Image (cartoon, rainbow, N blue to C red; front, side, top):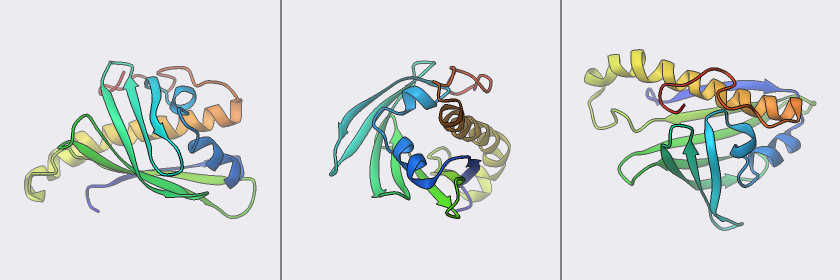
Amino acid sequence: TMRSISVSKEIKIDRETLWSTISTSEILNDCHPYCSTNQSIMWDDVQRQDRLVYLNGRTYVRNFTKWNEGVGFELEIGDDADKQSHVRWEITSDGTKTSTLTITVTPFLLKKYPAIISFLPFHFWIKPRLTSYLQSVIGGFQYHIEEKKVVPRNHFGKHPWFS
């Protein structure tokens, strides 16, 4: 949709290894530059849910709604039922040792406002900050996979919403 924000990055790894990384329980502890803690609430073949506490203490629950083995997943994230952003993680690969990870977010912010009112705040306030956040998150996964190390917190710079 017009209100969705997508970021993609090529990572030097095959699809299967990228999938096994992004689908691992509590993986954000190793890969997310703004994560203080990532703890699974439930993680089995039927239901997946975890808690993400950011460096600034903001706490969100992620409820996974679609799970497409080897390809990606979708989830709702937020701190309460009214404030849920929709997130899609997707892997594409041409069959080589390189894959592309794409994260798309449809934020809850301004959702209740008509497009004409929310256009400017969305494009000039939300979109740049969310784009920079997603670049850092995907960058954290790339760092963890390619360097085989835990990504340092705030590795790509501090973020006004989560640091």
